Amino acid sequence: MSEVVVYRKRRGIELIMLLFAIGLGASGYLLTGLNLYAELPPNWIWGSASSPGSASSRTV
Image (cartoon, rainbow, N blue to C red; front, top):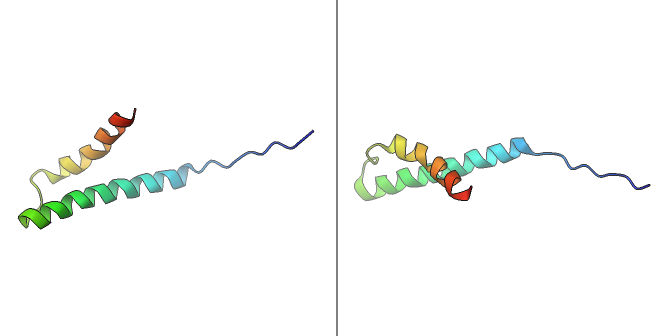
């Protein structure tokens, strides 16, 4: 009988990569606002916080 290969789950790495991607998107949003208007976009906290929710709702 052959051995069963069980792969490790890498949920911690997946979480880190997800947080990195969210941070990258939020920083791109903020840097674009700074470049265009020389100030942060109004309500930038809500814009940065809603981007992960809108991305996850499109993929489901």
